[in-house]
Image (cartoon, rainbow, N blue to C red):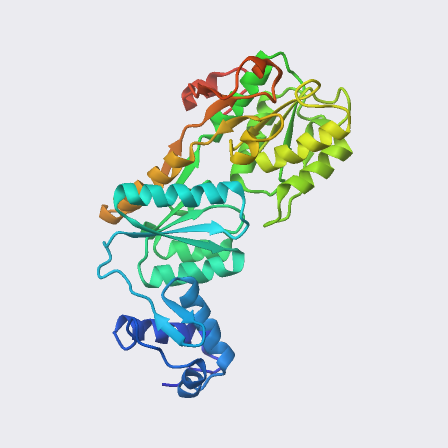
Length: 382
């Protein structure tokens, strides 16, 4: 076989090589535990350069279809015998934060509970699309953490077989891709109600400024509930680049913009942001909780063991994964289009970063709002 290299060829050469290798694996030409031809030999057979073959192999490796063994060549990995065999991929962003680590552990435990083999993968924007391409080709059910690594190319790959995918912590259901999200309308309202009951009216918001749809919802709810939200000193934009650790950016943002009397309480949209704010506030002579109440979204290890421990919104990650695994199973069984959306309710955990939590540590206040209730609250527009 020779790869089509005419100007009219619509498919890039590496994709043609990928398709050739995928078809050969599906046909049993290349089988598990038997070494595949070398990149150089395949390049000669297909009349392409070695770099083109190497790029095609990268897609297959990223998708867990083949593996390179140091000093021994490339081998096809064992695959499920049938499409319904219990195996699920979980793709996390290659930024290793506490949420990613917690999700990996929870996924393994959920897999054990359901007797499902769970493979943990890590990807950035570039290699995520490569992984998804392989998962679509080989029909591998996959759960994806829907952070900023999920770009247009990755979405296009998922749209080819949406029944194979569930995105958590991002809404892509409007594009036909099944999604599991936290109830962010309720979540920010829970935090606002809690702080307002403590007597706070000037409640600031610290966020990544990522443009992520979930973050945009959280910002919109805060603005609708905070009468002073239009005052620039109440909104803290950390401008965190994709894949970077938020704490440093939050620290400098708060250090530059937090002023005495500007805000009496601050909501951080994740625990890493909150830790940066905690340090900056102390250096400015506005310690938490004596002069600034600080709450966060996440309830991760970072927040639980900060000094002081953070009052925060627990998004219920175990339930996110439970719903995601169940949604994958249900969509494999459905005959007329996938179910597209599940919503998980959060809960407030009160700790010492808010003044009134001095009597208690780790008290959980369950979420009690429905979306209908929220739409009726004064100052909130759904």
